[in-house]
Length: 76
Image 1: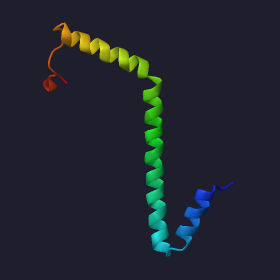
Image 2: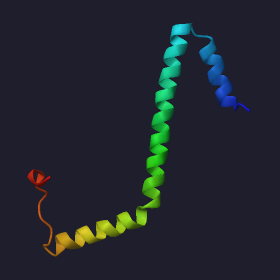
Image 3: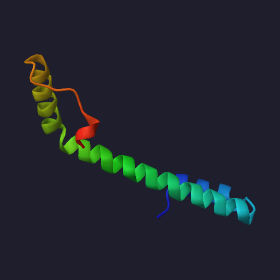
Image 4: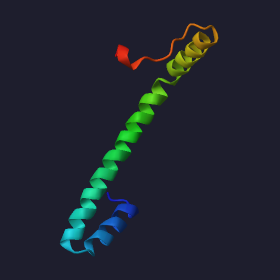
């Protein structure tokens, strides 16, 4: 069942010439793909937030204890 929002968008797009309809469809595909990527990223971060916090605490402690070294790109 279509939501009111999707029906509204469909009606708006149907009023456009065919070329513009294709452009809108392509734009929406890209926009929805970006939204899905953001959602997936948010889920990934939310699922690992505890370990990220622990890693940040450990890194701050290493810096405070003088155990950290500057990042050296040539070592990659």
